[in-house]
Amino acid sequence: CCVAFSPNHLSLVRDGPAERREFLDSAICQLRPQYSRVLGDYNRALAQRSTLLREAYRDRSRLDLLPVFDYHIARLGSLILVTRQSYLRHLAEYAAGFHEGISSGREELAVRYTVGGSGSGVLDPQGSREELEQALLTLLEQGREEDLRQGSTGVGPHRDDLSLLLSGRAARNFASQGQQRSIVLSLKLAECEMIADTMQSQPVVLLDDVMSELDRSRRE
Image (tube, rainbow, N blue to C red; front, side, top):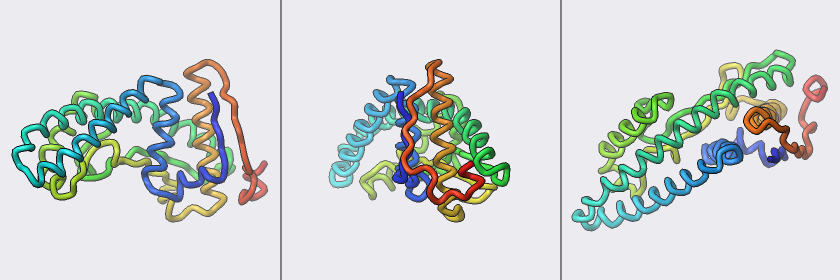
């Protein structure tokens, strides 16, 4: 396995949720090839449901097919949520330790899973797979009219995010350039530890332009 860092990876902090979901999913896929199949099946079901939503908005008789796609999205989505949470629990612990070292103990990094879309504040990502499946199914049913208007699915792991908190504050809004780089390095080093733990071998680590924007203590 290989873990790479380049200045482009600062988008993990700066940009939107899609970047952080991609980081999390790609890291998991290296360790669990079957997870890639689950993601692919979920994205196909999501695309098919979106097509059906647009058709049903014009022709309500098509609504009879929606429960089939709701079931598949809830089942696959719950598997994705459980897998992400399991991986993130350990990744966050490692990342916090690395960041404490890089910042000489001056900062605390917390990485948390947050539910986006219409499931925010309702869906508990730490629930069991069965609980998450039922919760997703309920939310899909409750949000059906809004989904019809939007032509897309408003709840599910495709809407979720990772919250990166630096000493309790949102890193995206408050972290300096050097702090952002330190956060991404901590996440990447944590990914290395996850690979080493799971595969019992050290990954190849590729680092490009690591030191720029870091002060002397962080470079050391």
